[in-house]
Amino acid sequence: MRVVIKKSGWLRPRFRSLGWLSLFLLGFLLVGGAFLFTFYYVRYSRLIDQLLQGPVFPNVSQIYAAPEKIRPGDKASVPGIISYLQSAGLNERGDNPKGSYVKLADGVRILPGPDSYFAQEPAEVRLSEGRISSIVSLQDQLARREYSLEPALVTSLFDRTREKRRLVPFRDLPPNLVNAILAIEDRRFFQHSGLDYLRILKVAYVDIRSGRLRQGASTISMQLARSLFLDTRRTWKRKLEEALVTIQLERRLSKQEIFEYYCNKVYLGQSAGFSISGFGEAANVYFRKDVRNLTLPEAAFLAGITHGPNLYSQYRNRELALKRRNQVLDAMAETGAITPKERNEAAAAPLRVTPSYEVANEAPYFVDMVKDQLLENYSEEDLISDSYRVYTTLDLRLQRAAAEAMRIGMAEVDQRLEALNKLHRRPKAPKTGPPEPPSEQAEAAMIVLDPHTGAVKALIGGRDYGRTQFNRILSRRQPGSSFKPFVYATAFSAPLNGSPGPFLTAASVVDDSPTTFMFDGHPYEPANYKKEYHGEVTLRYALAKPKKRGFFGRILGIFTGGSDKDETPPQ
Image (cartoon, rainbow, N blue to C red; front, side, top):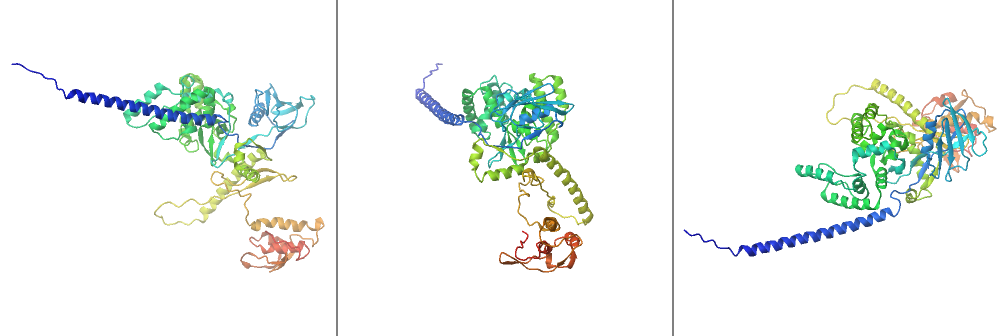
């Protein structure tokens, strides 16, 4: 049997056409890909050039407190004075125009710079047994009875985004913080070129197996690229754009510059209605410290919350925040940044984060008031784009004392109100549906003034700035009976000051009846609450009786000599 095999001629043209089609499609994809790559590369290149032409972060205006005065005999410590000087902008290197300091064995040498608030001499402050023993001027070597320190920074002004930031150069970042960030975010940051290819391949494998983006391979450079130019969508397109921007950032900036920008840009939570950006502001908010003074546990906590500031919030879930901090400590031990002993000691340390109620220490209501006054003469764009330094009369010690007094006093008020509510509360039948909202808390406000100058030394406009920014100090409301002591004090002291009218005491009798006064050609008729009148009563009774506004006019008429021409109605 013979088998004859013949070649099929129709297959060859088909394969030939398919081959040309494949080459055409491949060429089209290559050309299209090259075009898209060039388009986005040039686009982001221009954006980066535009960003780097000026400062990456705007030179926002800053608000400073009143100068801190120290005297021999005051309680103080060398670390405390240095911490204050750092908050005022001085450093130990001597490269800050505000000035520098030198730590001594038993004191501090203060060297004001050309941009210091004062044109004052340098001085040495010596301490002994927890108190200032002497203050000596370095100009004439004579002792001083008083010395004013550079005003401390209260906060930076903010725009409508309500974002707060304290810029920190790379050289001022403590080693523990740098090592903590590297250990938990990007261990090979100083070795790779912006893209960690080994990490990308590993994450891509996991994502392909799961069928969606489950893990991130973002380096610190990629995170900075995303925060400066891109959104947070977890898509492949955004990842490719992120890679393009990262490559260009790595070409234009040094590793230290990238790390510095990241540390000043990263979002680190919310505080009293403000966004916390950067580790400089976070160190102040969470620990009331300059970032240079962070301890190992504190640095580990801040590095840990970069992954999810609200998730690891110590105010919402303290246990989860503590667990996250210890994860960072474990990572630092794995990289060799700390020893196992240091890790164990830091992990055993309590999480001493500043309580949320101490946000009033930063005087947010005072800052709002200052900003409102500034906006009368400057535009908001000027205030957040120029580096104005605004010096105020705020006394930080008094502000902290006022905030603490407010907290203690209102806690007592809350307890008493709760006791009264329980006493008068009647049992009610159970209701179906959603629970009723809690009743409003009692509110309070406080202002501390210098009686000689009228300067505002401390101000609290409410018990919780995060809940409401309404300033009760500046609000215009009817004072009601709260104004009575001022009117009565004026009436009692008027004859002593040479004013017309009889001499009044608490036993003096006045007639509480309807009365009409003429003011600026118009009649004024002060009235009691509910139009009730009591006839002849003593001033002691009138002062104690609540909500009787008609007494005001009667008292004013008496100590002005009964005249109805110059009578000024109470506002």
